[in-house]
Image 1 (tube, rainbow, N blue to C red):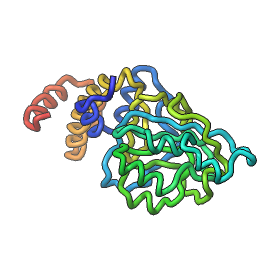
Image 2: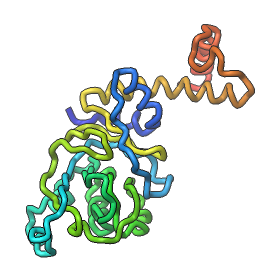
Image 3: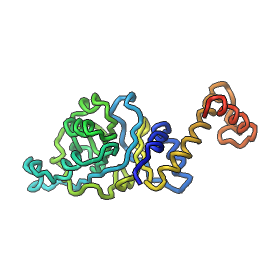
Image 4: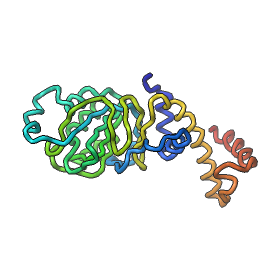
Length: 239
């Protein structure tokens, strides 16, 4: 099922840290994409969208010339034109940032088409241009060489690995200042609900801790009295 507007809105209000805990409780430990960081300014907000994937393999010199971009079926270029609005383009670059996974023009095209964000475990060229666009973009580091230098795009919208995390088409990606986490599609709704509840309690705990209260019995909530106080706090704050 497509990601609902209600679930998307909930996921935009919760953190990847909270979602990681909710996944951990279900036995998932490999869902955080490793070694990627936001390129965009914090004001862009959280990234939420379903995965649309591209897979690279190491380039072979006789196949990776500039002529390949004349082919409208080239997986990287076709993905830029077919990734659905509201989705996240995820590029498996084998954790190799020595050549770019994409550049400013392609990311600008994704933004114009309404794509929710872009993630690579490699690097982006034109990184300052991409940062200025405002579209959520996550990468390992800036990388000027064209992707053809080291990357050969071979497949589009199939299961990939990105930063050691498994990503299946349609999985839900959430990105914030801590990085990007991958939610299995069939769990997205319940994870959004649980993370929303967890966030309410965490906000309550943060307020209490800043006011000088110790964490014993509060975090985690092992003292029933704290849950009673929390119930009143939720009512007062409309949470």
